[in-house]
Image (cartoon, rainbow, N blue to C red):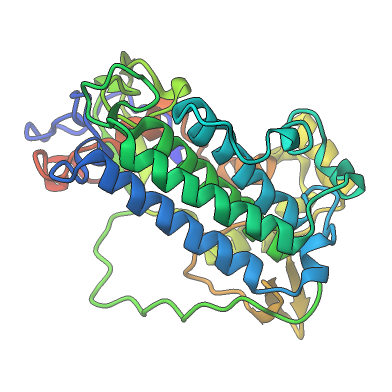
Length: 355
């Protein structure tokens, strides 16, 4: 969360604004590797995650719709394969493709999620086979492609189309994780407990971001999408930004203070949403013997006070910020702080303090 710009900023003369160069960590990552190698690694990692999510449940769960907000998991799997068939095999590789006839069926714009279970979808074994065969074709296209930055084909230059499809599959992994969270039944996903924090917590509550211009977006990151281009200069007034996300413990204070019952903290549309949805806490939270508990991928567990709060909508986040006397950061403010380059401009060069 942020505070509005103070009338005067910190006087520390060592303060410097975030980097104004068109460079992010992703711009230079794997700079020593050939684009084809980077692409293959990205596609491999994405596929491992996809298969872990679909292999975790039986076929009846893959074809079921666990919420009208979500597709059946088997639709996601075949859709991933179909987009790869369309963009890499056919568009970039100029090959006939495996199943062009499936394009209308797996077009996300033609079929709302709520309607997808009624479609003649590939069954789980067919979807797995389709994804595997398309991936073999993808490797063949990648092996033959000129993916150097100088390639005359914009889809192939810097392996753009391969990166685009890896990102697309990663996005669907997020979607499938949401489906797993909404799924009823015994737990099938598990993760190790995060390591405990070590050492004293010395971060201040917030950090001052000095006023000034920064370069937003990119014109050089090879896998950036069109809505991230081109880079452009944005002048942002000074502001304070929290050094950590809002925690579950901090959000519980908002709940206990009656935040969900007090219309002062909500926009008009937000208050209407609270009443219509009967919101009392973040989604999947419930009270058990006086303690806040949550359901996480089928596991019932106490809400960890130190973890970032999740499963709140914009209305809830905005109300909590207003309750604390703050506000949510703008997109420009968030990106300016996120693009700060600690290697060349150490965080200690920023003035730290309280408003």
